[in-house]
Amino acid sequence: MTYILGMSGAVKGKKFELRNDRMTIGRNQVNDVVLADEAVSSQHCYIVRHGDRYYLHDLNSTNGTMLNFERVTDRAELKPQNVIQIGSSEFVFNDETTAASDSKSTSKLATSAMTKVVVDVERPVINPTFFESISPFGPRRKSHRKAWAILYAALILGGAVLLVVFLKALV
Image 1 (cartoon, helix red, strand yellow):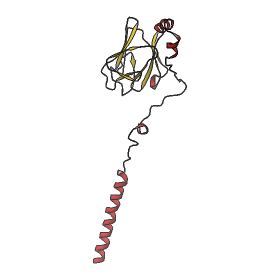
Image 2 (cartoon, rainbow, N blue to C red; image 1 turned 90 degrees about the horizontal axis):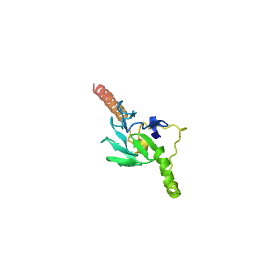
Image 3 (tube, helix red, strand yellow; image 1 turned 180 degrees about the vertical axis):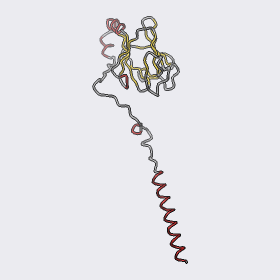
Image 4 (cartoon, helix red, strand yellow; image 1 turned 90 degrees about the vertical axis):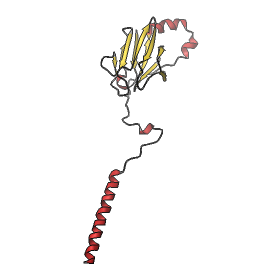
């Protein structure tokens, strides 16, 4: 069985099986995997099977598709335990059929060097509503328009009062 497992965002813990030769991913409802994320294009990417291999294709999406933290420009071959990032959602690719046959043919050294991905289902993922805390430029300056408007109004009002007092003193 071949599938992608959601690791973060709204798809965390969800398993999407690749039942056909092609699985489309995007924001549009016609996709096999629909991601309600503004960073995801309507037709973002797809996974296709060629023989016993799977490939990830980016469809010239605006924000790109990442495979193991590297941008996919056209297509990239998927291996078990590869991490796919689409918008704010991350998936782990698993192909149990090739993993079983590969485990028989690979050495223990190659297996021990493989990165293991741990999915923490208990802790919820919270997407930040703003990114001030992670900006390389520091927090955004806060606008003080209201304070300046009040100060200008007070100065104008004070000037008007002084003008009236001065004019009464002359008469």
